[in-house]
Length: 301
Image (tube, rainbow, N blue to C red; front, side):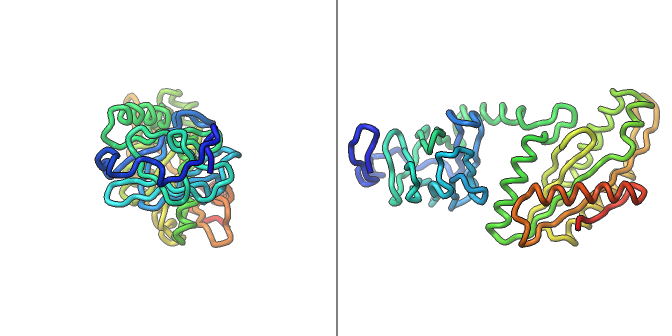
């Protein structure tokens, strides 16, 4: 292996761990500093994480010059090591190409894969705290204060891929608030925004208690991600949410507002290869719920 200047480099030639800084805290993140998604942060949450272009990777890098299986990030006793997976264009750490033997990562190390550059940040850095605050703003829907469409879409992709790798059930709920246009027409758009916020916070509380994740997908439509939850589990969760919305008293400027929700449920089978296919099934189930009189739960085919 050679660096851009032609110098042959192996992992053994990098400074040994005895010459490196003390071990980092157990948690860390990779932040994109150059590439297609600058500012994106990858939480290093596991002990063995695959980085690559493949949708099944733990850390998916959307870069055509990144191999499908680019590199492994492995954690042991709070120390992360980066290992190349015999990638086509190589994995570079601080301008040096590494191999499968791996190199211990240190604070603010720079990793280059394809045309993407990432910075390694442990969880005790002020810079990471600042990035987290910016990230929270970028990922949050302004009206409902739950995840926005872009971020819930990213989570759908990553959680679906993880569930497939681990052989766990995975379900989606699509929630559509019934007759929401009438609320805007009869009470005004401020009332509509108030109803969206109150309902989103109710759903967020209920979904979090069930171990799921909620996001607003647009208009009066929400999506719930349920990992390790089969079809029976998802149907029960959906019915709990439907009942909670119907039972919640809502009012705006002294006027009572009745609200119900129609919910579509879809659970991935072994033949389901893409989360968008699963979303389409859940979305179609919502339309069946609407046709069946609203305020009900229907399953995807």
